[in-house]
Length: 296
Image 1 (cartoon, rainbow, N blue to C red):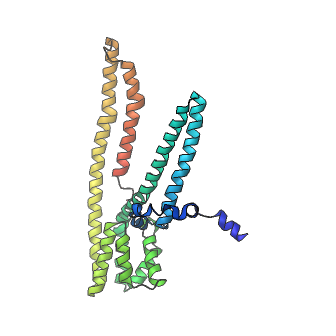
Image 2 (image 1 turned 60 degrees about the vertical axis):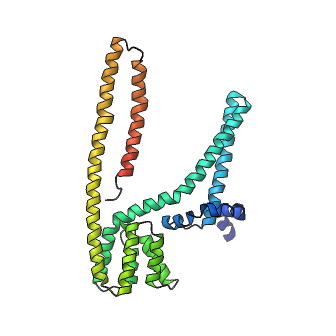
Image 3 (image 1 turned 120 degrees about the vertical axis):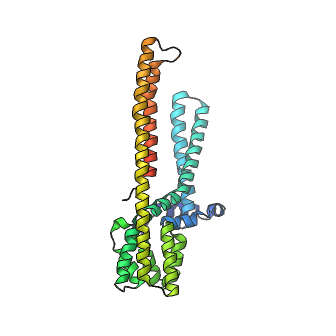
């Protein structure tokens, strides 16, 4: 019964690796950069297993899309070109899936780095308070495991404590390794500063307090820039998606009463209303989402 339950709960990447296994060895050198990206993204999957999942998922998507699209097109037009078109669409879908899975670890690492950068002033302030109480670095990182989930530091602290307590590594070695795979440049700089302070016998409390003040200043500057960007985007939105459609609507209404000339005012107004404005709104929302910080 237990072996059956284990088989039912087998992760998808493990299934892909079991199916493909050594068949993708030739691919590994071409995706070697994913090894660091997976570590930075916090994805606990080996490079070979993830590469197997990429190939396996792409094949599944290709087969599913080719079969579905070819069947639908052939039923509609009864032509052999429909099957070829379905295969072509399936190839595009499979290639898009492979490329998307290839980019996913980097995107997740970037998102994780932004969250860490946003919460770092509060994390370092907490570390400075603990250091001022005479708590050693090992226990400081253990305390961070139980910090507020909004600080996004629990996974980092958990891996540091694991390496120290289970694998028996010293703090300097662990911080050096974490700095190498940290998705946040600010956190990487903090680790390197902690290493330098420990090696030189410096005052840990003073270093953490100075870093906390510096990170807080950087956060204030970043929030000020975000507000300025938001004000600029608001002006663009009013001009592009409120004022300009009104002006065009009035112009087209006047043109329709005067005959319109070579331009069809009604068709142009429909394109503006049902296509241009929604597309511009989607582009604006994507721009706003990528510009504004998600964390306060």
